[in-house]
Image (cartoon, rainbow, N blue to C red; front, side, top):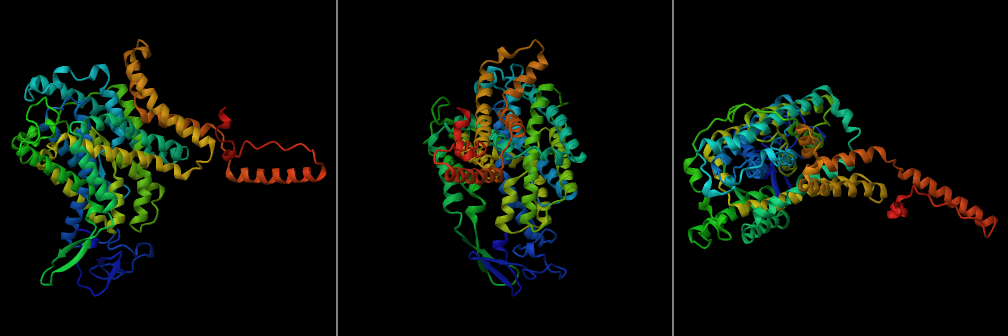
Length: 576
């Protein structure tokens, strides 16, 4: 499955961190006998090497499983606002569609984009503006769609209710993706990155996840016991057991069976926790420990509330463009999704450089980055056409998996793309994930959204947080990103201009926390003067020399004025 469980016939083997890592033709040789570059000496397979076909399949499946949590989460988050809360069959169709499109976009990125082993999948950057658009009065779900007893999922009326909403999302995503393609293929991304720094990126990414606390809390609150166990298992596997290697038997051809070690808990913490919690819910359902009454607390933790999905879902279903009808376009939706596009582009550029470093490739040149962003825009266009309700972006989780497995082969990522395509065609696969009990999803969301928030904040390591300027910009941006959308949601009538489309644009933008916080961070970071640390130190030295000379010449001399550039001394004093 990974480098840690790869058997070898050659006599050369490396032992690192008590894990046997082998290569069929030696750790420092390519298939053709050429030496690897020094930067890739610690890789089992470098970017241009081709592992055996069966390893490609197994490692491709591993990449699929690594991205599984993020891929499944996006349709499940959007389900309620698409009026699909009580239609798990359609949710399974959306999951299958996002699998299929992610596989297709992965192949495009590997062959024609930045040409690094980066997996493409649904993006959380589009979730916030999508929810903001669907919260407009025009698109709020009718009350009857929220009542399971009143919903007939096969009725034309219900079908039209959710399809017209996803068609609106499709149109907005397709138009916004054209902006991303323009920025990428024209080379504008390099120009924009000059002005987008950590103080813009940190609040933007953090506010992708922070406003979703309500959704995560409500799902977990269906049964806090199940949700807490899911959280406990994820934390246990990902933090406490991540360095525990599990013995794995390896058998190859006529050779003897060998035992190697595999960091199972480090690679699949979310998947293992999800499966164990899912199994527990099944046991509690079979034994009727969980309540059977639909109105009782914890009923939605039962696995039989969505049990008919597997039987109703087709074995094979081929997603196709326009499967929900002809996309519609509104100005408000387009502006909102463009905010998500900018956030997605910034994150992807960072992923490109991280991926290149991990697979032993040189830093991607500017034209490769431009091409990668352009292809991601094309991927978002295809995602909109197919109707995933979301776009596509580079998956940081899979970039991290490259560092764990030390398998940087581009062929493996091609295999992962093919696995995603196949999973999207098998209808029963998507249906199975649509039956995950709600509190299990809530527990997973609490951990996942917390990590996304922390990833955003971690960008602050690249700026001086002893600076009152930087503290002010980040604190003000992220707080306004929470406060302003909350106020606008409660007082939308006070922002009406009399022009319906303008009102919708204003409401969507101001209720999208990542736009509010990101815009303020961008504006303040590029307008507030910054005192460099070197200038501050030089001024301090000059001040000390002046003070010394004054003290020697006159005992009662005037003290020099304290420099306002030394932010670590001033603190919050500049604000008071």
